[in-house]
View 1 (spheres, helix red, strand yellow):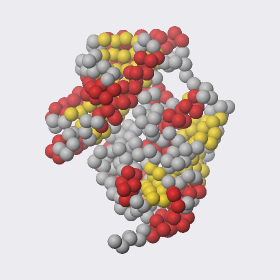
View 2 (cartoon, rainbow, N blue to C red):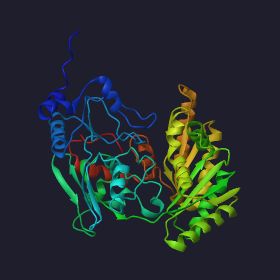
View 3 (spheres, rainbow, N blue to C red):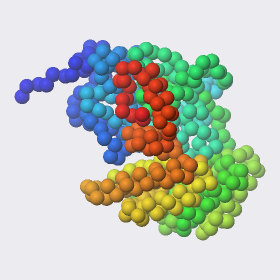
View 4 (cartoon, one colour):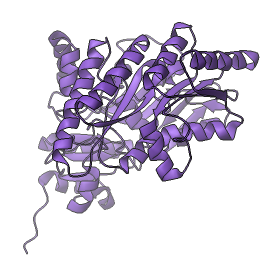
Length: 461
């Protein structure tokens, strides 16, 4: 059999980089060609490049510019919107080898890291210095800081402490002209010029290839008080969330997990939670001293008033961690049951009960199993639509349910994505949410920063 010559860009990349950095084996390419978004389209790229430093990242972009080849940035591939999915002829740039934590500065409360650093690894390194990096997506044991920045990831504690954007001070980026630029600052304050670093956060690789990130840190927290409420109705649990918000409380976490998720976790890890409740609300307070105890008790009172069959404070840290482990395990546990199409809508907190009721009705209307996990405290809901493997009619029903959930979120004054990003799955949702004039502004920014259109084309706008 005659060997197929590599694409010209591949030969160029091999000339510019060490041999082991460039991969074009089709079997390997397939494993890098998409993220975790079910049913988001993807194609085989021409190559995967795994640079180990900024200079190599810049060389990749410059080579792709010479050949007019798309550049697809990739972190750990844990995204859920298709934002890292490849197209034919593209070059996927995986930052998996860029894992150095260059600096943790306790006095200035900042860290400088490469984009391939895993979220939990950064958090652990900071904790060893008495510091804390708050953004904690459920994928924190696997997802990377670069990917978190690209999607503006949230997490369990963002109800009180905000999302990734709130912690990015600056970054180093290769732009669409192949130039290496440094954006943002290291100071606690700074308003010089337009906030280009903030613009990069959540841009999903469409405006630049991030090669370094400077994030701000907080002092380590005192131990949290954890409470749980067991409900027989998901709408009642939603009412408890709305009541806590209306009471002016800001818990450090307020998470919802329904029976479908609990059963999946129990089947996998045998934790026994699904025998106790149809829906569990998990709340946490990190207020110091007596204030934390009072806030925990206040949450329990709202659980009871909303109809909780049982509510209590966790007996110890081990029990509290087990409850939140079930929350983090819900998505991978459900994946064991079949393809999972993950929603990511956010509604005003007062609308959480109504949105949960509509999701439940949508599942019944389209004969689709919909599990629910949620960062309920900030209105960010994650309905998980599950279909049997190979069941095309079920998949079509699930896709229709997906669209209905988007429509309902917008109808209630919400948004089509709270933290997973637009990627491929939510482009039409973005068009429904935002005015044509606003979309045109975003396209103008894209054209200005990526005039040759090589940076993750086809994503977001």
